Length: 451
Image 1 (cartoon, rainbow, N blue to C red):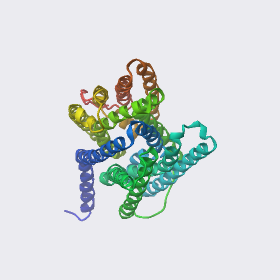
Image 2 (cartoon, helix red, strand yellow):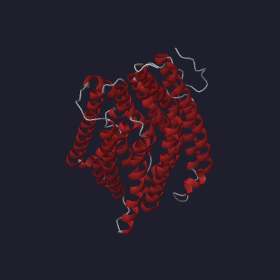
Image 3 (cartoon, rainbow, N blue to C red):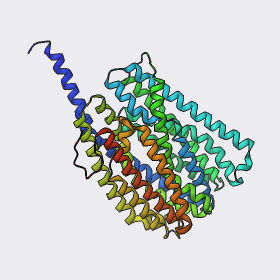
Image 4 (cartoon, rainbow, N blue to C red):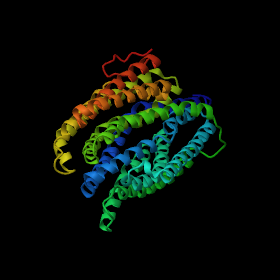
């Protein structure tokens, strides 16, 4: 064999290894993410049970309402640059444009930090200048929550960067395992020190947990990036990045709205105690949602890399695998959660038997939606983020309208029905849009043909 042929064969072998990793890695990575998220959910569930039992349903309901807004705004203040990292950074690395990859990483951190601090500052000014806008019991928890939001935003961006490099453990463990376990430890410590069982104390525990977890994740991520992405010049494409990421931010906000619209509307129509009872059911339902999260966390960046290589068969294979894995695992986990629901709800305290049908409806909605496959993931990673944002925003409005219609008739069960129906319809619309735009059928019953 000639000497000149050896470099070509070496490059071909390396490319083959990368393609094998793209094809075979998602299932293992998804399992890793799911195991971490289930462990985190266990700690989060224990923390919620502890908070509910210590504070009582009235204070727990206040904590739930403030927590919902904190999570929804905090995870949106990356302005879509967290998800954008999974789209742009792997593409730039696949093309060998490391200057652009370095530019994106720096720009994303600056924009995320600036946006989060600005919104938190505006919220603090509003709380100080117009305290009458908020009931007295909500003012102290909101003040603490304004400090938590920037940490949530920064950690969400760090997660996206780690996912872009397929470092799923580093992406998921600090925000979902470490942060939740630290919060529970802080709550136990606060109780032992004699802190009053109020919502602001629970939010303060989250602040401490988020600060420690974010600092640790940032340090570990920077160390790995320095080793794997050599220092060098940086280039910026602000118009392209923000033009893509801002619609993704709209998707993230609408997704967060989908997660919490029932809680938000219920908070306006029922007492804090009733809201706390419903919120307990939604915390258990999150075990089911984690399946889709795990599959997406393991696959999004692989869509971008395969698309950059124009490998349509690989893309179709990734879509098919993710769709079937997600649907099967969602159904399995959902059945287990519904079967254990009386026991899981009883951990929060007596009198939650009426929440079992609520949890069953929420789980059924997640299972049915999973059958339509990863339509949203394709639209955000391959193009079509504006269409995805439009569909999601429209269906969020529909979900809110259904909540307003059904809650007066059926109470909290009406909120669960509204969200479940809207989630299923949205999944169907996103699957249809992704199929038409990219020629990749996503429902699990599709034949798998590509155009």
